[in-house]
Length: 273
Image 1 (cartoon, one colour):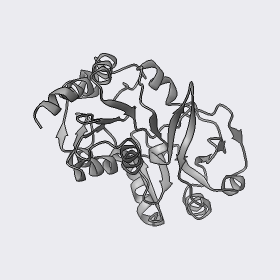
Image 2 (image 1 turned 180 degrees about the vertical axis):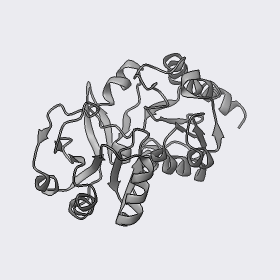
Image 3 (image 1 turned 45 degrees about the vertical axis):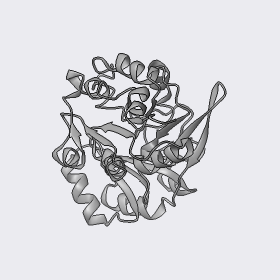
């Protein structure tokens, strides 16, 4: 697979606009990169249930998709998909810390099986097959993620909470919708994409990732450490841009399509070797 790039794309704010329509030019750009022979996939904080539709809508043919901020990697299995790698942790210490500080928050956990348990429903959550439970039941078994939404608290509140609670035993990301998403320690989109890259036998320096959120910072660091490309969207926060190797335009202006169009075809890469 000489000359082939592994392309990992965030969803919200990168592929999608805030109304969940596609960013201008993205379907066409993804198709061009795919047809050129590159491996184009998704690396998102969303669950697989909330991701699969975009894999299909974009006609992605990659065998692996990274979900849940790297805690879950799906693999194609014939006409269906299977959970290829799932990282979990004991949620009880974190849930106890959070409940003490955010007693009125809404909580959700994702089990290794993919099932979701939640204390109260939210419109933004994909809960097909999920089950509403009492808070104590959230910690009954290992989970791949904890998601916390606390009405009335903003992003700065979450930053203070993380610092005050000493959440250093797990990885966390604060989304642009002001919720806290907690994954196993040392797990992020980059760690999952590295497993995919190694499994596919792709070159270390030929990785291209794009995103706009704090949960993309780890992925950016991974790509840059390999000599690859880490593209921040134009609307990304300053710390996300600082972690990237390059910056494209805003999602509303088709920034991802612009960046994808700079990828060479594998034949072009091979010719220069």
